[in-house]
Length: 95
Image (cartoon, rainbow, N blue to C red):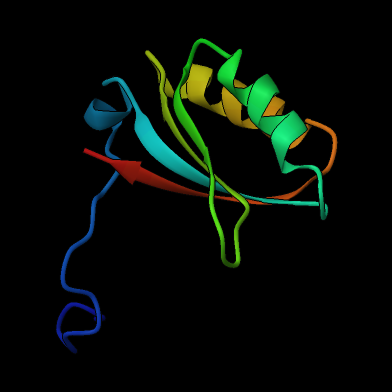
């Protein structure tokens, strides 16, 4: 319906087949004030994290990740969310 109304111009569907591919995503992270530098060091130590940057705006960190399976991605996302001072995350899968 949203595509018909031109509200959504492009979307990606996670089918069973695509779930078996290597998931790649950007994760935007909101942290407690003043804690971003410590989190960046921990994020960069994770082998699935390919890039980790401090950013200015609504979110404090932007991370690019790659995993072999969706199960590994879910595990990574859980580990990131459990880091100290992480308030929230938003994930955007990329092709």
